[in-house]
Length: 114
Image 1 (cartoon, rainbow, N blue to C red):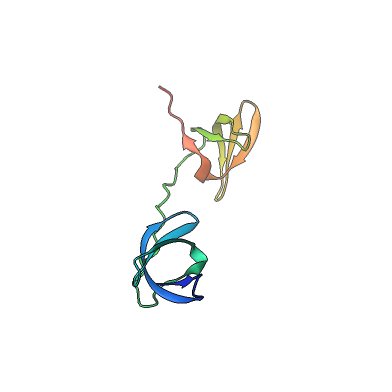
Image 2 (cartoon, rainbow, N blue to C red):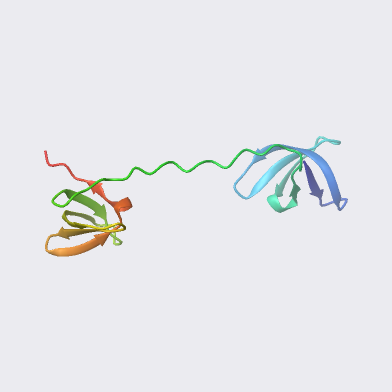
């Protein structure tokens, strides 16, 4: 890889030592000095192999039917538990203490009474 050397104002070959959140530590291949640089100063090798992007983990679909108990966290971070009243393609209607909520199935978890 190459990086922009701020003292001589040109691209120089280097080796990556450490990756940070906002910066990178590189070692100059000629002088063996280490520099902490912003990522914008680094030019990656075009021929370097890149890892394929990680595949998102499959989301498990909760299968609920009318009469099941389900819970979710509302936008005010309160836990809500209710009974499924209606199941649609994209939403599930719940009756939570007399209030009617329409919630995406991705946010619901099945509640089991013990």
